[in-house]
Every structure is written in C-alpha cells, then in structure tokens.
Amino acid sequence: MYKNVINKTLDDLNWNILKELSADARISTTEIGRRVGLSAPAVADRVQKLEKEGFIKSYRTVIDFDKIGLTIQAFITFKSSTLKHAESIKMIDAMPEVVEWHAITGNFCMIIKVAVCSSNELEAFIERLQEYGETTTSLILSESKDAKVLKKLISR
Image (cartoon, rainbow, N blue to C red):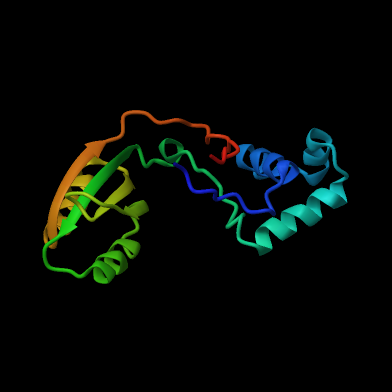
C-alpha cells in the first residue's frame, strides 16, 4: 500500500506545470500557460509558490561531458573502513572528478558518479578512494540523454 504523498498544493494544473518544467526548465511561462490553459502571470505565480514551498528545488544545466573532454564516466561504489560517514561526504564533495554522489543502503555506503579525461585519471581517483576503504567501479557505456518527464503520482 502506498502512502498518500500528494499535497493539496499539487492540483492537476501544478502537476502539469511540473511536468513541463521537468521536460524543459527553460520553457517560458507563456508557453507553459499555452500548454496548460493558464495565463503567463498565473503560471509565474504558481511556479513561484512551488519554489517557495520546496516542490521545485533548483534548475540545472546538463552538460555533455564527452564534448568538454571528460570522456570517461563511471559509477563507483564506496565503503569506507576508516572514515565516518560525514567525513566521507566531506572528502567526496571536495573531489573535482565527482559529478554526483548518493548515500545508499546495502554492502556499500555510497555510489559516486565521476567524469574524467583518461583511464589514468580514473585509476588515480580509485586509488585515492581505496586509501580509505573498498570500491567497485563500473564504466558507463551509454546513458539516457533526455531527462525523464515527471509523471503524476497515483494515490492508492
């Protein structure tokens, strides 16, 4: 049974606005309004409210790492044997190769996505991590270039 996580703020119009923004964060309020049946000022008010209430956390630019020379990307699972969790996070945050990280459950504590220029850089990164614990690395061969569009949750 799913817990009902839908807030009253998320009516059908707000869900449709979130869907449009998740597909293209640079879409104009005028275009969103045309697609969802609202005026641009009404969309702007709703977006501002969604931001204020924390439903929209940020807007991001997705960079093509291959085009900027970071042609090797990998997922690395990491389990520290010497650092506390907060220390691991601080260390990972300071490493410029790290694109994103997630604290996870299971045999490892963290999964880290890295982007580097060469296999030598990846090897050096892995060796730095292994000073503090265990790693497993998986090279990324391909990935979805388009973000998934938000779908409305169905309460049960």
